[in-house]
Image (cartoon, rainbow, N blue to C red):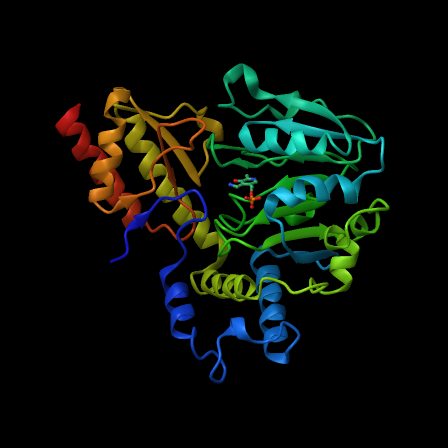
Length: 358
Ligand code: PMP
């Protein structure tokens, strides 16, 4: 029995993709699984190339961008970005909107002079800066921001305008949730374990000219040029994750691509925020113009009931609704694989719980 899984990541994956992977597990293309063949075999190379082609299609990635399948998670990119895009002693601008931007900033400080272009501490990280409030440094190596804060549930409703300075985005928890104008970015990175596939692979989309600047001493596996030149196969890649990501990209295309995903994700988010806002029993602290479609944190007016809420939700087949350990409360993550029915079931449960305990 499958449950409705609201995990923030690793997160629910599309059922048809899981079924296909299951069906192909023992015998993929002749008596072996895809995990049991060389990454350099013709059969696997075809998987790898098709996955990239489908991702390019889904996001309409312009030809002057390279798609890299890397390892080390999004966290490895926290250091790979400064190592590849800045010289020693250079300055880079960072926008601080919550937990993940803070983690990024902390790591970046080891490599680059970080200037904070905006810090939303005053709102306890329930807002994003107005475009005009971004204090950008002329000539900075790049500007980094986190379009969707997975823990805070805060999302940028706009793409910052940075002129000639490359814009870098940690899209771990929002990539593929809606159409995106990739040409506005110098670099986009995302860990796979939310909207792409199992943990273990990191997608990097980088403008070609930005792959030529790595500092001397950058580890080879994090040097974008080296990785690009090797077709993301400098060493053995996580082949199963790559294969699985390819199946997810195929599924997204069958479902109507990112325009269809955006419609579905908007409907899911509206149903849940609508329920929260219609009642004084539930509350979401995030400013309305920047509420995430992917991660919806909420609290109960009676915090002493939160344990009961989570336990009863679990029994009702609604799992992994506990908020991040740093903040508590509840959080429902609504990535692409979460269905409208799943959100409807959560909303029904919330109404019922309020009726019984409100
Ligand atoms: N950035 C964001 C926005 C995230 O949500 C996460 C993980 N939840 C990370 C970075 C860290 O990713 P990883 O564990 O793949 O390094």
